[in-house]
Length: 220
Image (cartoon, rainbow, N blue to C red; front, side, top):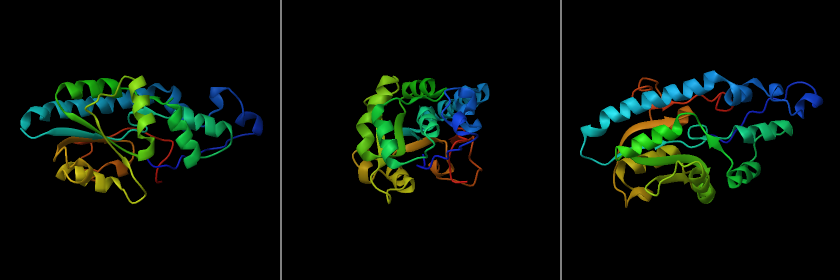
């Protein structure tokens, strides 16, 4: 997840502070209310499960999937609603406050996918650009949603230089924070931004890289 929520302030001040969900910007309303968003997420998770299940028995090495958190597992659309109603955009301070509230919901399809993948003996590596100091509230939020297990691994961001490329390399090579775990064979990567994936050419999306829909923010 990139920390750059786009806030679309549409209409008059009266509309801005309305409690009517129909007044929300189309991107946020689409995520929160549309059947299309739900079905697209479910479709991506079904495709990912098919590929993970097909590959899981093909290797004697330790297997893993690398999964982003925000807008991939955790639905933060309520944060965006709150910021929009105040006429405000993303700030690190407001984001950290939201994370510590532990009120994120689940992206459709995420829970079933994680449960089935764990049942194959595949390690879940949550790789997020949430800051590492927010690890505990993140775990607690996942616990409340019944999608956390003690065997899960977390690679959150230590600082601005701690890119996902660095962390992906640690997973594959068993170095740095992954030294005690050892190298893992990654069966699939899941995320909502192109930066969540090692291969950005597009040729392996739907094969071992699976992109969830997110119309609300990104590097556009």
